[in-house]
Structures are given as structure tokens and as C-alpha cells.
Image (cartoon, rainbow, N blue to C red):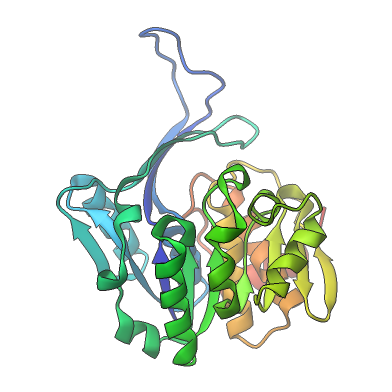
Length: 308
């Protein structure tokens, strides 16, 4: 399976555990501080590579030490980074994530170069040669650019998936409507479905995505698992019962597992189970890159662990 993960790339700096920010110039000791590659493209690339896909990443980052570190981390994970364009006038996107003891993750985020990505940056030949394109954060590059990218991929026989980045409160249907006819797998979270569709019911929102052209919707719901909506019907996919350390990257890991499962010819439900297993494995440590696992490990985990 040859995948291009295109879109949002972020360098995460994670600190754990953080119950509160010290006042003034106070200080407190923590157990761990880590830097990882992340984002709806970068984080998904990490898990796809673990699950055995051949992965190339495409997006915009800065020509700064943050960008150097991001490229190094992706490369060390076996990801082809030659399609990452480097900006000289815009910094690399980055986040500082103070992880709470229960795994929640508020964030301090620098938007950075992600929003500067445009048609002139797209590796069109690589999209045509790929078996799958995963576009993470289309709302950041604009509906017109995202639609052009996805339609080109479909014209060349490449299957497609999309995950969103913005919280639902910042979303609108106009930001995604034009690209939906070119999306095989829509992979948002529950909040995004409600916010971007303007619906107050999750199933209605997911069906609105399909009615506008998406092939299916696999909607993540945190500890409640996922809701799979296809033209054939609706299925609930449970999350696995684990001790959560950090939820950073869990949505990206689910996307990667789902995409890999579909690429292997599994049913959408089976692919969603693989996605849930990958998310559970990532959630047991700090950062999007947590876990020394592969496809066999993830399948074994899914078979051996009970759902919530």
C-alpha cells in the first residue's frame, strides 16, 4: 500500500502530568517532556508506517530548527519527507501540550506554515502513483485547493480519505461541501461532524456527509468508540478498555488503522476495529508516536482485549 499523507504537520512538545500552570515565575517538576511529529497528516503517517504502509508526507513547514526536528522524526519512522516544502518566511507549526493526569490535552498552538500550502506545492505525480491519499485538515488550505487535490487523485484511481483539524465550533459545511464527492472515507470526530454539518444529531450529520458525496463516514467518539455510517447502514464500533495516559494522536491513529484496513481489503467494520486498536495502543503512552507495534501486534491486541 503506497500512501501520501498530505496536509497538517505539527511538532508537538508534550509535558506530563500537568495539573495546573504555576503562577508567576513558579516552577513544578514533571515526569516527562517529549517532542513528537504530529498533525492530521504527520501523525497519521507515523501509524500508517508502523502498520506496514509505504508512506510519503506532503505539506508546508518552516526552514527553522522546529522544521528540522519534524523532518528528522518523520524520517526516523521510515516516512519519505521529500514532498515537505520549506518556507523561509513562516515558522513550522507547533503545539505545547500540558497533559493532565487523566490524559486530557489542552493545547497552545502555533498555526505556522500549514495554511500556506497551495497547488504549486502539490506533488501531483506522487498522487497519481499512490494507491491512497489521506488529506488531513482540508479546511486550512481552503475548499478550492482541497477539492482540486482530491478530484485529481480520484481521476487517477487513487482512493482518498479526509480528516478535519478545526474544532466543530469553527467549522461550516461550506468549508467541506465541494470536496465530499471526491472522498471515499470521511474520518472526523463527533464534535466536527456536528459543527461542520450544522446538525444537532450525530447520525443526521454523518448522513449529510454521505448525501453530499462521501463514500462513508467513520466518526470517532473518544471512549465511546466510533460510529460507522455507510450506504448500507450504521454500526457502532466500541473502543477498547485501557488505562489512558495521553489522548494525543488517537484520532490520527484511528485514521491510519482504518485506511490500512481498507487497503488490505477488510470490511469497513473490520477496518474501524483496526483503527480503534491502533488508537488504544497510542493512548497508552505519551505522544502521537507512542508504541512499538505493527499490523500483527495491532490485530493481536484487538483479538485479545475487551471493548468498553
